[in-house]
Image: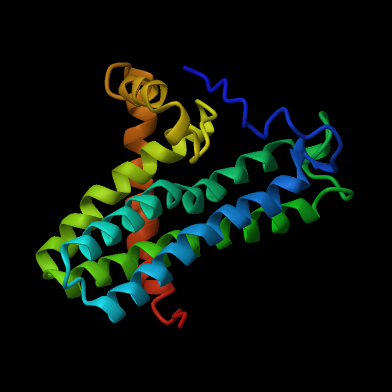
Length: 216
């Protein structure tokens, strides 16, 4: 099922600058969507520090903030998939598919994807540590084990089905139907499985490479 959201930005941009059919506006929009889970995490961390989740209402509110974070976290990994636009960076027939005019796009999309990779690894790592402090290491490891397949599904729902994070509040039934396709159709399942394995690899490699990155 392809999204027919009235709030979709795919058809909302009437004037824009494009790089390989990729609207430059979307660079800033996607980076803004990446900032949201950062803000939610820092807020949740600060809220826990102030309240200690002593009251039942505070715990429920903390869960609500976490669920919002969960909805927006796939936007970090989604940026990595925008590397796909590099495949059209030279005109058809270019020798060895390399051209002087557009060679710079390789670096552009690579750095753009790296931003998504760092954000993806950092936020999962920090939330894992946050959950480990509340419960224990076993729960934090289970969290990572469950989160990456969910992130993978969220990325594919955006990439193939064109759903946005906020559509979950507007079209929850349609998004559930779209999600079920990934476990009933071989080709959709294969995409989900390979993406999941890939994100596991990117996460564990990233935790080693970016382990020194820390935001206060």
